Image (cartoon, rainbow, N blue to C red; front, side, top):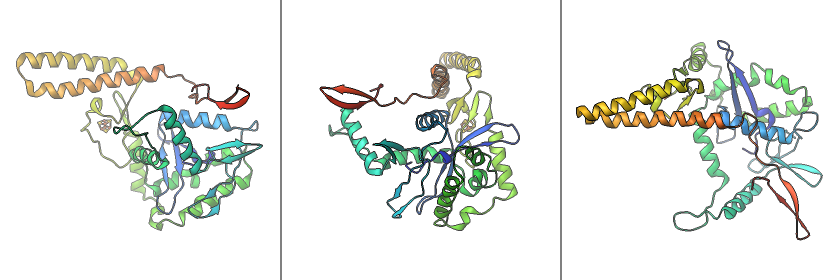
Length: 314
Ligand code: SF4
């Protein structure tokens, strides 16, 4: 997470439909493959808020050099998303700083575990959560490599307007150095068949009540019972259709109970809960502000003669 830079945010336009697919490039490491992840609308909002917060007047994010504690090398200056200003300079967040922030944040909430002890999260916990989510919408690296600016470099070229050439080269060199630590077969060129099936995956995501967000290469897990499925991203335009499905399910449950088809009632109830859940998701999405998510900017207030930093949302 701390290695995410402005260059990590990229997009791919599907040739057949013109749909823009936002993607996040995760740099490879000795133990992890390079991944190009499909970004959810919520994460896109958060990333856009972070970029807006960091942008200098010329549109660029300040370049900062981070120390790689595992490889024991300084990385080249990059427009890292996780950076903060200390004194007159910008510095990257370190793992230790993140750990301290987490400890302080959890202490401030007063939350405890089942045994009454203070909750403890390590950055690694978030990594697990993130990776779980990422794998659900991840792509094989050898396909990712082709999408990620190494065949079509439109997005990288877009950055050229605001970043010096060395910053872009440094980012590429960083990725190339990390790639050398991975088995070479991860970076083979995809076959025509693999590439076609990759494109077909996106085209087949559209279902009647929304979009299926299952990972590339994974089968449908719920036998196309999309209303019950957590992988469905419901389409707000299909709210009336979902209401129809909900009302129909209610009527079928009443009929099943009347006729004594108790074996069916349970399954219908699950579908009804799913339909209600999808409608609630649409309503939540419609209530969400259309602009970027406000993460709260630190402000300074004077307390008893001391200057402290607070967030307007805290
Ligand atoms: S049931 Fe789930 S996984 Fe299958 S097509 Fe529908 S949304 Fe996708």
